[in-house]
Image (cartoon, rainbow, N blue to C red; front, side):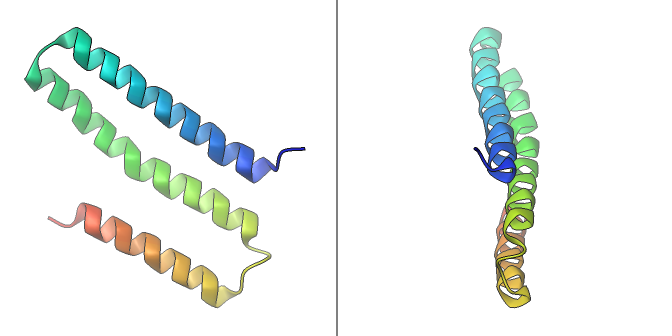
Length: 88
């Protein structure tokens, strides 16, 4: 039986990957750099949300197995990732 947390994480990644492929096909269909950049910008908004969502689900799945200190380290690492992505 598949773990419900793993299934949720995988489902979100499958949906995210499908959006990436659809966006690539849309860029090819539009065949204009300006419009392709708009599509790409939309994907840039989805990526961090997917990362945060799958990480949160994973953390909930192992919450009973990790100490508070280890969870804090993981959350700090994810925070640094977001800081690096969003820093201007």
